[in-house]
Structure formats: C-alpha cells, structure tokens
Length: 384
Image (cartoon, rainbow, N blue to C red; front, side, top):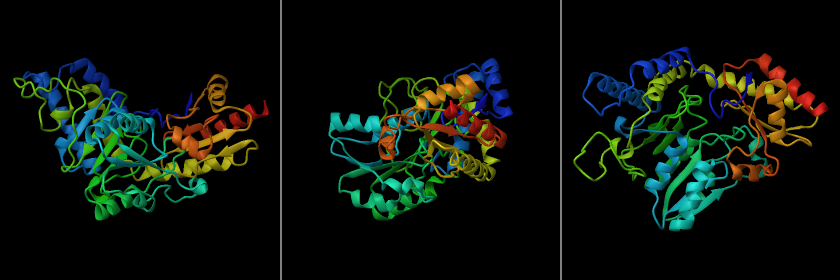
C-alpha cells in the first residue's frame, strides 16, 4: 500500500521502535513506580528517561511538568478543562481540531466561558506566510482573557501559525494570559522551543511525526501554569491520603501508564531528533512536487501550499472526498483521508464543509515515485 495518511498516524516506525516495543511487552510487563521490585523499578527508570528526553527536545521548563496522557486529545482536554473557570475568556482560531473546539463549546454552555474565533481573510491560506499571527490575536484581548489557543499547523491543509511570534508578543503584551499550542501536526516536523517561543502549554501526539506508537500523548506546561486534574486515582504516591497529590506529574497521571508506548516514544524521539534538519526540507520539496502535479490536473482544486508538515488537501469536481478516498483504497491500494478531518470551522473557512477535502499526508519515507502513482490514480478516477 502507498500510505499517504501520516497526519492521522505515522505509517513508518524506526527499527529501534519496532524492536523495543515488543521487547517491553515481552520482558517488562510491570507497573512502573508502583512496586519496589526490579521490573517495576526498571519501568520507572524508562518513564523518567523518556520524560527527561521530552523536556529536553521541547525545552520544557520542568521535567515534572511533562505529563503522559493516552493521546493528544486527552492532553488538550486536560489543559483546557483544568485551566478555565467561569467568567474566563478564550481566543482561538478556525483552524482548530474538535479536541479544542468541543471542550471550549462545553465550557461555553456549561460555565459561561467566552470564546472568540479568529477567521482570516479568505485567500490567506494560499499565501506562504503564516495564517495566524499576533496581529489577529491582539484586537480580541480582553481584561478577562485567560487563554489563547492555536495549533501550530492545520491538520486539514497544513496552514501554519506563527507560534513563536504570538507567544513572544503575548508575553510582552499580556504576561498574565496563558498560551496553549496544539502541536499534534508539528511535533517532529519542526523544532519547538517552549521557553524561547513563549509557550505555556504544549500538547503533543506521540504516534505521528514523533515516531512513537498509538496510545500515548504528552502535556507539557510551564512552572507558572496550574492545571486541575480531570481524573483521580492511584498514583503510587501518598496512598494514605484520600486527596489527589498536589504536585506534578502525579497530580495529572492517575492510573497505569502505557509503558511500552513510552519506551517506544524514547526511541522514536531519538530517531526524529537525528533527522530534524532533513525532515522539514524534504517535506516542503515533496508537497511542492505533489501540488505542482495536481494543479495541472483538470478537475482538481488544491487548498494547500508547500509545507514542512507533509499535508496536501484538494477536492475533485463532481466527486466527494469520501468517495475519492474509498476508490483510492479499493482500486489503487492508496491510503488517504477524506471528509472533514474533525475540524469543522476550518472547512467552513475554506468553503468545503459540504463535501470535505481529500488529504494526502506524506512522510520522508514516502517517495516521489509514489507521488507520481498517486497523481495517475487521481487522473483515472476523474476520467471514469
């Protein structure tokens, strides 16, 4: 199969990840930090080692404030629901995933949290410049603004937000406002320095470009940010107390951690870090090539520009995105994503909410030959 669905889950796992995850399942099935025996202690050492590597990779302020979750959605919900309270105001964008939109709408209806959405000019997504900048955020700031939320890259078409410019400007203008970045599509594609960028909270999907397996996310946050827990339970610490611990990461990590996935993340991060100079440059070349080919196909409308995230979104005249995705899979053994990609406001902004878009998302393990095969398949679907 030609796998062009890397924005959903990375199709390539480094050899070290393929080897260590089964080894962990076979030889290290023990609950990390919950017992004093050798296997539990070894598991705890792996968890700490991975936590420290995540901190170093993203320049998080504290290793204790690197929290493992089951996915990026849980990381986002934990942050949003654990920070906001009644009367707060939030600024976010039309580019966000439902992992941001739905908890915000829940808080809007249940707790009266105010939410403002940024919709850029219609043609802005065709520009190579970032779609969202501080210039668009600043006019919406209020006295009760508590949180600004942006993703780093749209999962629909790869449009980019200038998170460094927003974070640094926000710190200068309103240091009391927390800046939360959804790094699901950018982590592993571009360097992210939380402290240099002025990011207070960073949420990551470990199974995409970070090279890990499914079942793990990460929530990183600054020393000045406090997040209330959504789940309560065993942490392996202060077991005599009926109250949740007030220190991190225990405060937000109730229950058994996904040790095989955490060990896999360590290996995935090591592989990604050694290729971070190559990945964005190569993906810009690959998306540029695919967009160039598609733009010459009659009946195709593209909605992306060359980007370091490997995302190319397009529509076909007379064919829904879901139908195209099914036919690519059934007739050509090519994996892509159709539909609305859990980002309804982005499709409303693009004007594609009725039929959605076909999203081809590449990795550096894909080839230009696969791109050529893909374009020929699109031509055949249109000709039929």
